[in-house]
Image 1 (tube, rainbow, N blue to C red):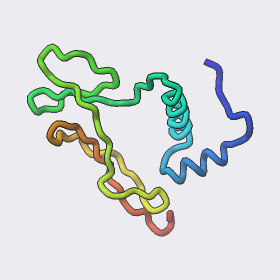
Image 2: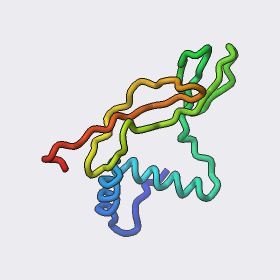
Image 3: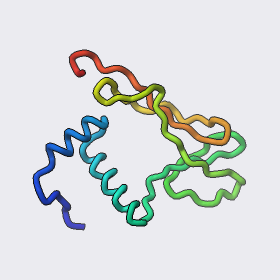
Image 4: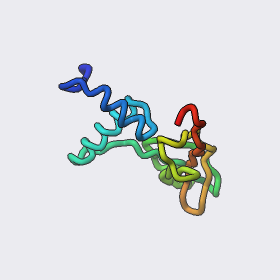
Length: 118
């Protein structure tokens, strides 16, 4: 696939928006492209699933297949452990997946930025 760029120089705007959302510019650009494709009805496989068998988390996949051993693929729900404001907080690496009733949850710890980064 050919390298795709913006028609006008918008790198500074994308960086500002990415900073505001607490993302890398590349992740933001990917997210914007996925949203545009989804709005046009194209399937976007960004949903991650976890195989749960007998109350145990077995594995994760973006494309679940039928489990021969009777397990169930549940969508992974991402959550922050506190309200997140990219101007005030850092989002850390996620905690291990946990089974919460009939859902699988990935929690991202949110911590305040120090004053020199605020």
